[in-house]
Length: 189
Image 1 (cartoon, helix red, strand yellow):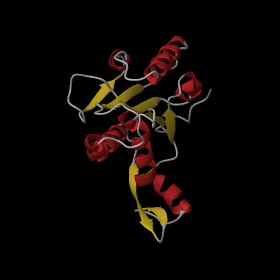
Image 2 (spheres, one colour):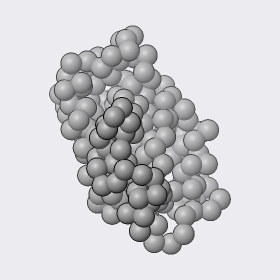
Image 3 (cartoon, one colour):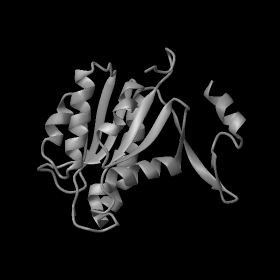
């Protein structure tokens, strides 16, 4: 599988989680927020991982950097955001909140076995408050969602990946910097 050409900041952003279990779906909620609020350069792929596992493995082969968004277990209070890098991710996800964490750790293990060369992999995690059936995030995670997504944007910025805030004009979303697709593409060059 090929990657974008050298010098291109290629990144995969995956939002993991089960939207039917309130805070367990925070990674997907955060991904949707990124899709609505930002416009990224073309080499960035935003992917709703849901509760998927190994079926996302080919995406790991196609990107040099992976940013994952998910709920994580821990001793910290609900709403605390953690940035976990590389080898620490499997350790943190070994404290399973959901069966999809097994899928995530499987993807990481198989990617390693297949010797996929990842420049960097980062998990932005947030401690959930509520893991019971429900479609809405808890008040705590709802209040922290903007900080959670901003942490992801900051990580991408550290990878020299620019995200432009989007705004709504006449009912359609437009980049702050341009109003047409051709202008947006030209601005990335």
